[in-house]
Image (cartoon, rainbow, N blue to C red; front, side, top):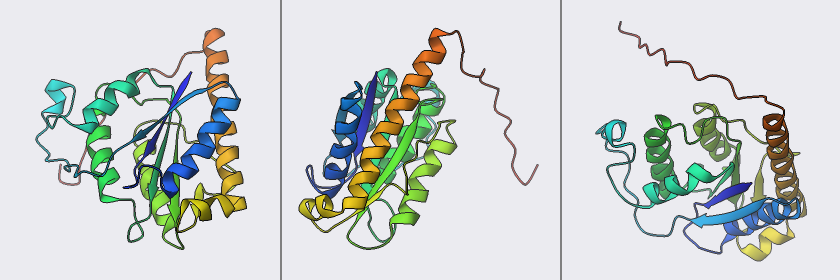
Length: 208
């Protein structure tokens, strides 16, 4: 089993990476393979609403989104991490997730695979960022893995984050809880318990 952890921060080994590393260590101690995927610090285009992904089964903009989607096909669980920028996630990970989840929705890449959000901040804006990231999971039929508090760490530097003892404990418990859920899914599969059948989408709006 494997969990992909996405570092949506502009620094490869910054505060978000530090938090994700704690989660990854806890997962590995439970026998779960991990990979931390850094989005990089180059511009990521937002969704242009061309709908080409419906026929191509990938985003028409061929960049980090499609590279991650290929990895995601084989992954069993996901952790998406972002620092707080103006009380929301970074522009990079927002563009990334908008395009990733929309282009992947028709392919079933994420359906019924567990996910969690991790947020880092110097001081505030964490809960609104946490809420923003979780919305991608709930619209995609993904079970959300929780910890003993909201999944956030505080600090202006990676060293500060490591001093946030409660935040580090939250990350550690999150990793253990994700590992437990994945093992339960595996055990259920071995017993012949299958995921619910996917229903055809009922699509309405407020005009007709």
